[in-house]
Image (cartoon, rainbow, N blue to C red):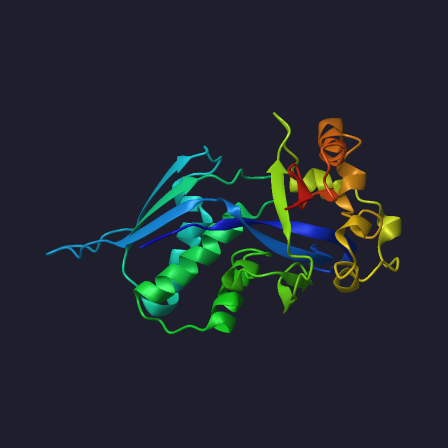
Length: 263
């Protein structure tokens, strides 16, 4: 079985406070972007004729990742279902097209698609709610990619409310400045704590406004902490506007920037 896990962008990202568990509560809108994706293929390994059962295998190609295959979220997704349902070993091949560490959710998408594929391959009969609960165990935004449709997200990004983007006639372009990488630790470390608890525009209301108005309504809090240290990312956002974008923003904690253009 082969699928194509897609990336996401954040339309606005408010960091509203730090939790007792060390994570942060967020408000954001996740929007799937299908033009940028990975290629994920999973096949069941033939059972051995005798002796010990096969171990799962994973091959990674495309964009080079900085983790070993056994540590990939796809493998963690398989282990999760293997421990619960005893599913057999599989061979996973992941060809990366989505840059990692860019705020695009590529790894989370891969994990969620793995869960969906294994659910279908082995007839586990898990519904979306079942899959979302297990996906959230793998990563904060993994659950979003189960239904893979526009959603208002709160909590750590795992509490989802499906929404409709009325302004649907647009094109999303995504770019990353050469050599730029922003660690999650760096992005959170530079946040303005005085913003925590500050009333913000309701993102669900803001996206109902014409896209041309989003520039003054929809913000990503991480831009305040990332742009001073990474002027090339800030410059890319400005460049999108010079090229005629109706709205532009960094996504997640960076380093990717997107522009929304009229079709």
